Amino acid sequence: MKVSQREIEKMAAQIRRDIVLMIGGEGHVGHLGGSCSCADIVATLYTAKMKGNPADPKWPGRDKLLMSKGHACIAQYAALAELGYFSKEHLVTLKSFGSMLQGHPDINKTPGIEANTGSLGQGLSIANGMALAMRLDGRAETNKVYCIMGDGEMAEGQIWEAAMAAKNFKIDNIVGILDLNGLQATGPVEDRFDTNPMPEKWASFGWHVIEIDGHDIPQILAALDEADTVKGQPTIIIAHTVKGKGISFAENVVGFHNGAMTHEQYETALRELDERLAQF
Amino acid sequence: MMKKYSNQRRAYGEELVALGRENPNVVALEADLGKSTMSCLFQEAFPDRYFEMGIAEQDMLSTAAGLAVSGKIAFCSTFAVFASGRAYDQMRQTISIGRLNVKLCGSSSGLSDFGDGSTHQAVEDVALMSAIPNMTVFTPCDPVEVRQAVRAAAAIQGPVYIRVVRNDVPELIDPSSKFEVGKLRTLREGTDVAILAHGVMVDEALEAAETLQKAGISAKVVNVATMKPFPYDEVKALAGQVKAIVTAEDHTFIGGLASAAALALRQSATPMDYVAIPDSFGQSAQSSEELMKFYGVTRDDIVKKVQALL
Image (cartoon, rainbow over all chains, first blue to last red; front, side):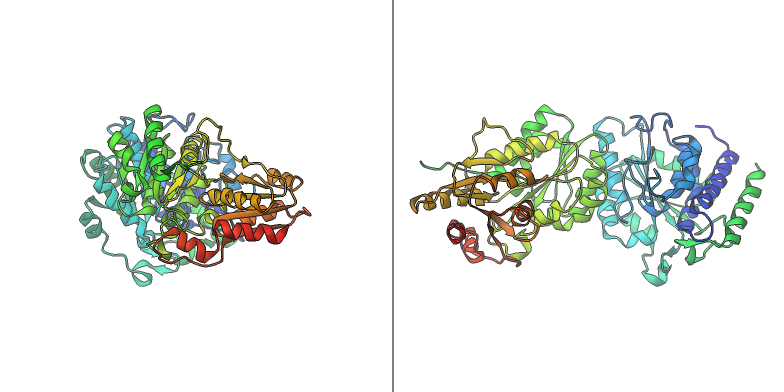
């Protein structure tokens, strides 16, 4: 897939704008921080890497993206809407009664969502199951499952069960992506519950480890391409990111894990992102 | 008539293999208990479609979810206590909310794992699994019904829990009879009392009915092989046909057959009582019979409850 860096960056800015729009202004809370930290990764996957068909979300030849950190699903909703999996009109209905856009991913409500996630620590296991199904169906050479996880989520024991399972089954059509933004709901990961060091842990669990700046599009692309060449073992991309990236007042602010913007902040965020989008 | 005994676990494994032959989309996952749950038979027949997940029940269930959402019918097997408890969240969150085709065999359930003690005796698994929306819960009474339940589970779109016991049990179900999801199965006709039972308690109920007959009481014995969707209307209708209803289960009275029947009979004048494990954990013993006697879930307990009601 030949897509320019510029197009991916534009998509990332659009995703961030959609995220702000979905969460809304004063009186509404939403997972702004962790959604923006993975926005560049989500943009790259959907525009430059994953095979898919918005007109046929269940197309058997597609690659799959699972948000194991399910609370960041709004980044995925934004990408799906931008690609035409559903109308952008739905975005403002996020978390409203009857909306197709639930607070956490729902396979039976949202086109393009691959599984219900949200209880943290389970996505990688689900992704393993999908990757094994691709193997059974003879698609492991041509299709991949991508699974975005959070660094706070690394405290969940099941992550490491899944890490062992992927190595045990030599699953090489799975790519884990660790959105390492350093902040969990109540503070810095290393202060609240230190799950470091990540590269050493994953390597010792038998994974091919790639470390990148998770906001640098060429690095994201190169890492995803490198993962395609790894055989006989799973790959994890450890992406160093900034929570709230791209929203000036929210960057590295714990309160925006699931916080509310003031009316002024909401307007500021939209203005900043409109300015960013005007550059393209 | 001499009873023919056979094993529910073996029936489970054999039927899984039969299903596997018919449908290439059937896969099996196990958490290091395959030689006990008998999913090992599937491994022998279809090694490529069998996944030994290690002693990691949570990972097993979520991996099954990934397989199921990709078009597979994923059977997971482990002891009932781990199946229902250890991986409850995985069953709830992804599998049941998503209505995925994961079938969970809770093996060595109830007091049937007599030696291993409280940590291994699932006395609340039916309550846990029944509490989850979108679930189907089967409580087969014998190996024949286990086979039928496995088949029914594969035909259902969505998650299913199948409760299986460890020990050899008498064959009670005619293999040519039809297993209908959510329907009661009358195994003995009677007019004074209806005894509702599931699992190993069905044979106890049939024995109790024999004893009651000698005392001049005509007991109908009804097998409840589907605990969810529970046949509330059928149980309510039963109340009009008899003078009393007694339930019998090797499960605590909370959230199992006693609870469901009481709910079904809430507007009925027909008196009901139950035989169930009290709100307590099990313990080790030399036999299931020893435990069933201690916790008050035997044929004699059924007889006493019936006589007290009539």
